[in-house]
View 1 (tube, rainbow, N blue to C red):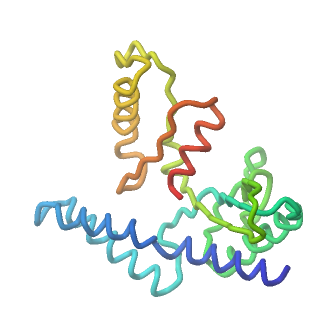
View 2 (view 1 turned 135 degrees about the horizontal axis):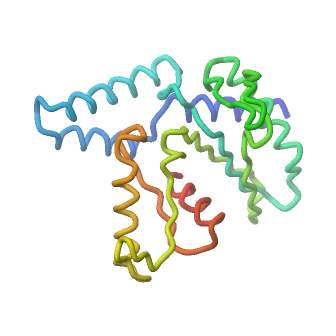
Length: 209
């Protein structure tokens, strides 16, 4: 159990402090395309420097380390309760080490106990698979991007969006338009088309993996 806990703490550290190579490459490519001397270029340069410093110092890339979402694929016999216990302890220790900000607040009382552990935090999504090993992925979704998430029903008369791919494109672009200036840039979209309301949001989050 200690080995699992240590592995989860390291996963939290790396997720908080390091950007995946493909995402960093996309950011650098965007920087190259920006016009020289613009505010946009300056902002992208700051983001690039921040990425390097966060990795070097093992400190969070963003001051809002957000919702803690574990995606766990495991064999049929895996003890999910024991895993959750290890995960919650790992979150507490990672918070104490400074890998996570103390930003989880009790929704009803407004109390922040400084651990990031409580009702709804962290969240675990368990899925069974045939292999014997356990695979764990983590998303730290900040409030800025979480709160500009949007869901639409088609057809949408206001946007003249029909129940087809053209209609999907219109509502996706409208979601981006409504979110501008509210979430932290650069913006990366996770999109799900179809499903019920709850699974639609869940699958759109999974796109970030």
